[in-house]
Length: 379
Image (cartoon, rainbow, N blue to C red):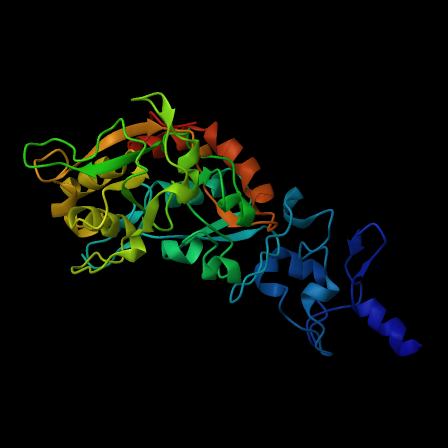
């Protein structure tokens, strides 16, 4: 009984309502001055120290370590646990993945004097970091392949396994994504409308008529990217007032079905889709309305960081090249670009949404939009 009472004195306690308190007798090893009050001054490092009987500071000092339900993270829920990353003890620590071939949303930037010393940058990472200025949270961006987040009709393996909390700059589409994912509140208006690209003949005319419902053609979807293939059936063809094909009524390929791909950018699904169009494997591409513009702009600024085959994308409007036969269709999505797409039930949006709402009201948000030429799309 005496041993039990001693153990209870060393370890912090919690009542039925989840309120908890620090131990009054715990201290670090043989130093009686390093008690829970000492831990509270630097909880990120001191909660991992142990007493002489190897009781962790986090166990003995739950209040000082921010572990108490009524004191954790100033009202934020605790972030989900992910492998290889210590959870926050006084505030949430969020890890978000993003690829680097989607300028201006995600790209490589040069922070220093060395050409090869690049980091992940863009509108998404800048917004993520800016949340730290309006909320007591820590947000880190890590490079991740798009297919690790979302692939051909289902959640990507890395996001499913919880290697990061969520993935940045995904559009909140209707359809399959909502069966796997939850989305943070948008960080931009619904500026990511969709469209169809077709080849141009040698006279500069589209080989696919804009009045077609496309059911007689082969259409390629950009695998892992919005708009997703299952959203075609909700679109309205403004050229004839009718609807487009239903997915089960047409031959629809994914960009991963490309027959052959040579070059440096064969990992980029948008490149692969355009190559499929140009090699005659498909008649049309289902794609973002601004994708060609974004890539051509990035290519004009710096081909080394554009992440695409610039020669290919610069053929927009040229005879023998390609053009949009439809554009500006928003029906495929519930909302605009989001900061985080996370595993359904993870609860990440409960942490991020209040911070995003605060950031959007600040001058910092405007400055980031201006930096990446997004002022016409800001919320």
